[in-house]
Image (tube, rainbow, N blue to C red; front, side):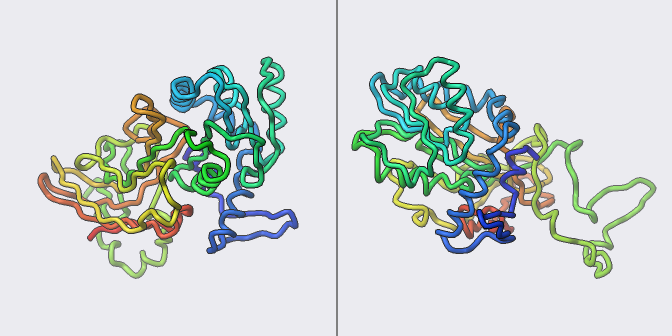
Length: 339
């Protein structure tokens, strides 16, 4: 699991009073507060930023996207600036003014780096973006608040709030277009971990009796129903990948406008084992620059969760399954089941 995936898996939230919440509250407002707290804690150390800064796929995509889309004279707001990298890129691209907004004390690191590199047109703001109003309209909102499953770093609430409050009528969001994939995949044989009762052993040892055994059931915790991929472990998808969600932050009405239930069908092009359904996303800055976290592409700092199937399928057979995104911003509530 990538460290970003480990951060996304954290379920313990500590408030300023020391209260410990073991489950994220169900209300949208309380969930928003919970994610603000988690993001503040998860990205407060150098180690989290070391991984992201070392992710050349991420860094190069943002560099291309910013330099293609930030125009000389633009006023830019960098949401969740972290180390300040996106703000620095926007300044280098010709921005007149950059507001680098960060809700944690880590903004001091960005300020120090910026001062050392001679940036003079960046204003560092220690505030929650939803409580900050710049003194002028914003031409470009920059952001990188995509979690492993896209939605689980408060991206939609924060970006849509800025769009509706501070973005100029002709303003842009970078990146703005997103596609979410939940695709059946087959793994390389040497990377595959089969369910207990499907494992082939030498000397004719047969584990199949465990599949419906009440004895074995006592020890099946259910924690293996989904897992995090190891890099380069996926051999192929089953059929041609198609996103279950596509949206543009420039026009999206709200989080609630995105459908939660999806029926997916894929046809196998060969006899294979469907190890599970893998989650990834694509973020597009323009028609030329897209950042992808596909397990078939270069490794990134984002992890890939897999909902486990371990199901054999024949060439020409159609796999049909339902994806339920119960609470969009909380992937632990998502489910995938075959039909």
